[in-house]
Image (tube, rainbow, N blue to C red; front, side, top):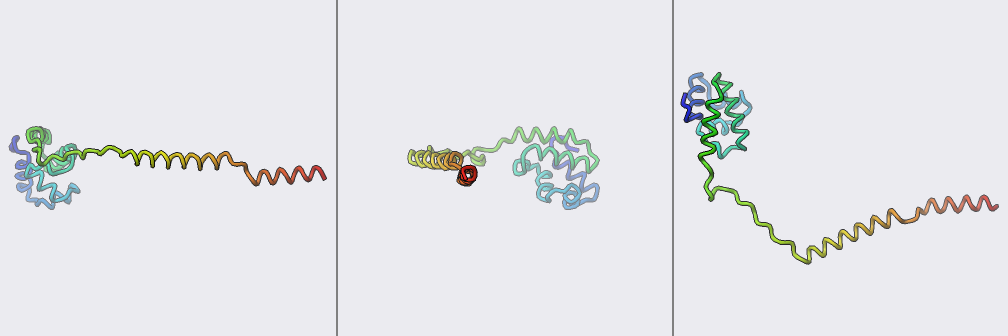
Amino acid sequence: MSEQDPGLSLREAREAAGLSQKDVADSLNLLVSNVEAIEANNFRHMNADIFVRGYIRSYARFLNLEPQPLLDAAERQLRDKSPSADNEIQPKAMSPIKPQHKILAALVIAGVLWAIAVVVMAPDAEADAGQAAITEAHEA
């Protein structure tokens, strides 16, 4: 087992057990492409690092291998292979909010608040009609 190459160690153990990548993927509920990526030590193209560690741990246990040396080697590779600036996703610069949009937003908010105030503070017409009926009944 190569402590420097976790993917090679897993592939060799899988082949020694007479299993295909599909067998492993089906048993661990992984995509075959994830098994291929693990065996190729292509961790950067997989999900977050925490998933990579979980996949390696599960794969090693499935093959009755000690997972920690493989995890340590994978961790070194993840640390050493930082993505180049070309492949790194750059956050999109946010453009400033235009003044006319601020005014429009303020008018919409003011309109909503006005509508709420009208509904909450408007006299209840049914209550007024009921009160008038009671008053007339007492006067008669």
